[in-house]
Picture 1 (cartoon, rainbow over the protein chains, first blue to last red):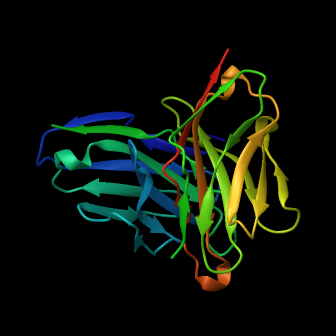
Picture 2 (cartoon, chains in turn yellow, green; picture 1 turned 90 degrees about the vertical axis):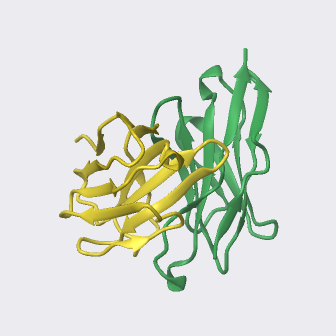
Length: 114
Length: 116
């Protein structure tokens, strides 16, 4: 039982390049989330998926797109990376937003945009 | 909309002393409250949560937190700090389910340093 896994662990991009961050969970959770963590800013929600087939914007969605590929996988795409997107990205999952359940986090992806 | 504040960026405590990491929240209705811990270069780990019932919640690694509705607080405590408790701690809040199925909102985090 791996929990929440994220790939890659590290990535360096040049401004304007695109990339997709992958996330998968093996806990049969309905809801999945993407956060970014910046020093002094805490965790800010980018997008979330309450259930398979739905996605919603969070606090900081600009410059990102997401795809809930199936119940297990939720990817985050940067179409044209900018230095302001340098951050640590965390994926999380929970049983469902319809209950006050715990979110479980992946190990993170450290992204640098030059 | 819900929000959470962690008024201290950094808390320093001597090993063996009690520790407190503060959290206050703002939400309409009865909140769901969580504490997470993050060790260097790791993801967040769940510590404890308050949903309903007893105001004192016990969690992992000897941590506990007290829900105080009148003060809108949910401070994290431990009777005797260990050097290994040094980490970044996040408080998070969710609005009641009848307010809509909204995700967690996190505070900015408090860095705890336990000195030997």
